[in-house]
Image (cartoon, rainbow, N blue to C red; front, side, top):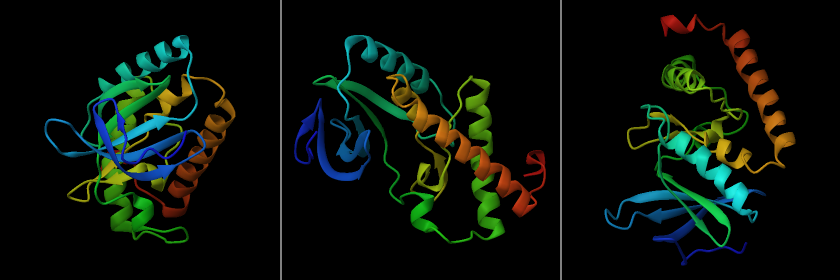
Length: 193
């Protein structure tokens, strides 16, 4: 799929390409009636009607999840057999932009991030969902710099199959990162955060 800046996907005008991976492109867009900024993520691989039905089911599940520390899904659509999601725009980027590779976050910042994310992860687990890819790039900062867990949408990507190896690798690395962070930082029990 070629860069679509300037085009419309459904009712959304694509303003700027924010990110690209082998699986998806992420664009800055405007919500048609409110004219507020949003993010549109489109999968690059064409999908069969059966795959689209599975993706749609996953999106419905995700759209029902409302938690103050989860990036909400606002819309879903299909253009030329390519599913797309529309989510809130986090203007301050990701935790990765605040803490480039090799940076060690100070303990108050780390605890502040965890204070927001742990309940969001717990909420997802209570709804039988596993993020599987928690990393600084998937922790976004809203207008007030509050961390939001994003890319639970990877669940909708997983519905298409063919990404099992990627998903397992991310799950292993996320588990490793979380367990090592807890050991290295000597964090208190979650209930005391």
